[in-house]
Length: 93
Image (cartoon, rainbow, N blue to C red; front, side, top):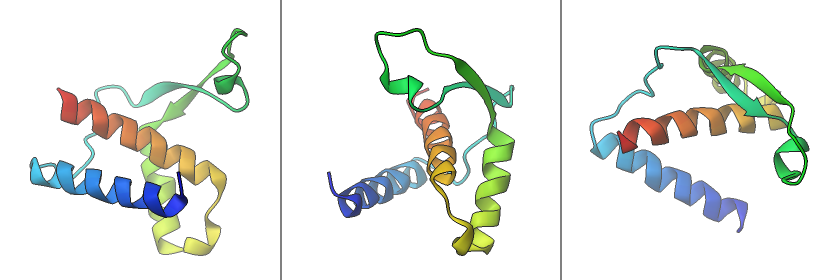
């Protein structure tokens, strides 16, 4: 899939969330979540070493990215992915 197609998909799905009345990604009762870092997350035949992430930290760092796009990094893609997963959970329930 092309990055431009992925961008279109995210835009379509963000519009879906807004159409369903979601203007914000709501922070859950617990701020932390499990994550499996690279390259472990693709090594399906080995036991992964989980890490812990923070939704509020992700949101804070992404706000800094909006203020200064030149600071963008691969880690920001992970942060967006975590918040998209949270949004997915909120849309599903």
